[in-house]
Image 1 (cartoon, rainbow, N blue to C red):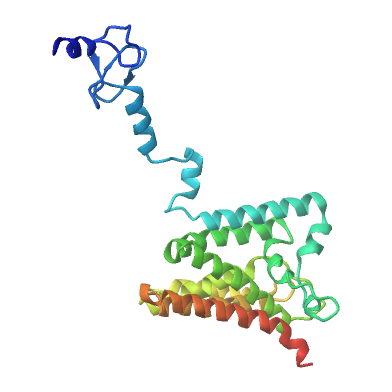
Image 2 (cartoon, rainbow, N blue to C red):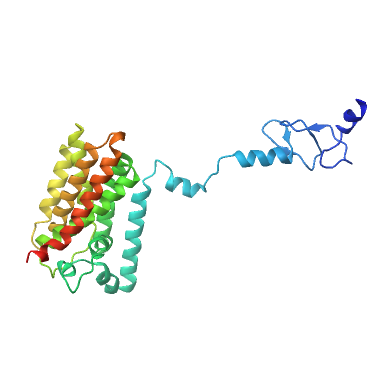
Length: 278
């Protein structure tokens, strides 16, 4: 009675006519040379190989892993990439792209209301030097803040700072003066970082000097720098940074989301206020 099982065990379980004495290191079944897969130790059968592949963690291509890993500033990469693509389109198609995306106060007036320009202006630039300088500054502060805040908070900070920068232009600049550039959003990052550093007890002296120098440069005649966007973006970023640092505990997450949403609503409402009060 026991002879038959022992004899049958000497043949490949998938090919009964092939005699073999090779055993799967996982399940112990007999397999022939065609059915075996080399493992770290010994060989395994096709079923065990399928199970191993099913349970193995899925991996991304190496380039995607390097760009989107949890420790990578993916949002910063994306913003820089989009901005450079837009500048390439500006270079190829000229003023058509620029005129479609730039902002001026007139575009918030009734009759010519184009609200998307409050944000799209942060992605267009006036020259190669302008875009490279802004993207370099974004690279410096973006990496620090994205790692500190996380991708969602960082993206909200950037976009709302850009919106606040456009509001600075709306309230402080001539409504017919067009403005382009990511400076408002970048000054928002500086403002947020300065507040966070100060509130958490970090040394913010060098950053304060850098911010002061950049603000002063904006007031130099002849440079055609939209200092209004700088001020608006910095104020907006500072408010958001204060919200983040004051609601940084995990149990305050809902409060933080609510305050950011409320601040975003205030910024949107302010885009209407100037012309309602005239």
